[in-house]
Length: 389
Image 1 (cartoon, rainbow, N blue to C red):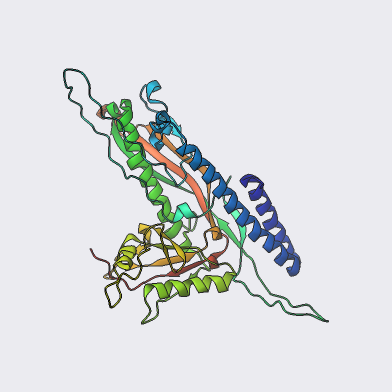
Image 2: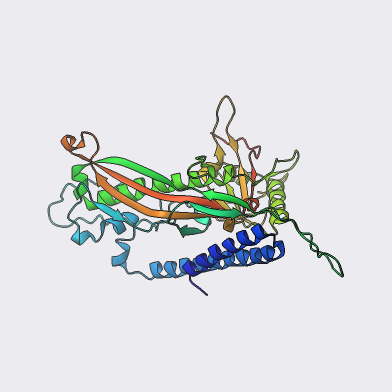
């Protein structure tokens, strides 16, 4: 199979050809080329899955010594034996994407006749970081704002032909732009912290980069910057669904799944729900007290869809309107998150920190969200769930 970079080059070439064919009025050739585009996107997904599987196998085969430096913070700071602290102007980069490795726990062994006083300030982190919506869509690299053609809702007028004009489906590709936006996260640290490897590693991994990762997920879903990232839920052309009276949540998700299938010809594979919605679904029972959805959990299934947990699916209360739980049924390859500047951590001074014995650590990334096929996403703004406080 060709590499991801080669496939992405082919995808861009096909998209350019579609644009030229549409402009020239050759719709038959444009439709044929759109099929190549869909196939190439699937090949990119397959190639990405193979790379991820290879990386996972390498991580699992790592020795205990390598596990000691498995966290993102350790990747940025380097080997602990060679660590000599960091100072103003220090930079570290790591290709963390949106699947940070499991967090290695530092050893806490004390030996010798006299027990020393050890102050452990490393910050405890989750066993595994949240994944969220962004972890499920393809990732790519870019050099700037991306101009592309957005696919229309499927109109299929194919039919038998004997004479005259052959059947035509009048499809219109819409020009669109995915603009770059920088997402950043900074926090102050004491200068002494810059020389404490374990403490610094914990702060970078469990607070700084985790916060950045969560915010990137929010932007991918609900971004509203017309000159930057416009999230999927704010993208023109996505499908909308209103929960019908008398229907339960599974009925609603099945209807949303059908809408995507009919509008695109592609079967959706995922549903994004908030932790509150997943909790409510897990507690629903039939008249005999049996749980209706025993498989509902992050990574589980409902209505044949893989469940993705993301806190951004809760619509916050505003203007006397109560909080609502929403859902997004989708096919991941309908969008991509393309990175211009990968995640990096920078240490510097801000305001009067020099005389306050402090540094600032900053994490940031620059990327764009490109929604090629809006109809691959179906959104229900209100599931009618009253989540517990």
